[in-house]
Picture 1: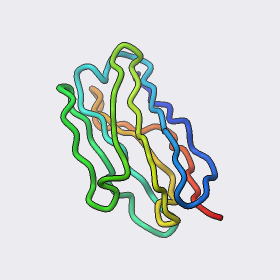
Picture 2 (picture 1 turned 90 degrees about the horizontal axis):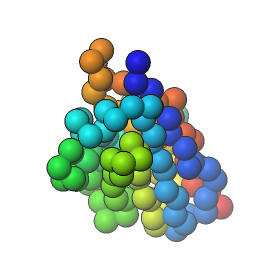
Picture 3 (picture 1 turned 45 degrees about the vertical axis):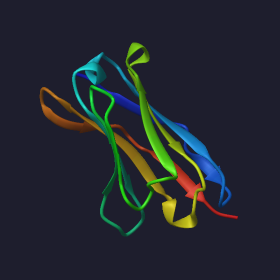
Amino acid sequence: QVQLVESGGGLVQPGGSLRLSCAASGSIFSINAVHWDRQAPGNQREWVATITTSGTTNIAHSVKGRFTISRDNAKNTVYLQMSSLKPEDTAVYYCRTLASTGSIWGQGTQVTVSS
């Protein structure tokens, strides 16, 4: 059973930066696209970014120009670099990919943007 583990969240001031990591227990990222989603309190989970196996990326309009997604297949890790953070970016961030059993998510990592 492949597992995903997110890390890198924390408390940051508005305008600051964070880099989130998503590590997989197997080499699943080399054969599947990986996505970052986020969920703020009281809100539905929303898609943030995707990176395909070929390295093509898509970024949600709300974070375009501030967030980038990248992958290191050798480390089975996907990153979400976040800059110019805003209070509205506060959420639990999850990575997601497709396994043999269907879509899987990690446990999430909390990002709080506040002064």
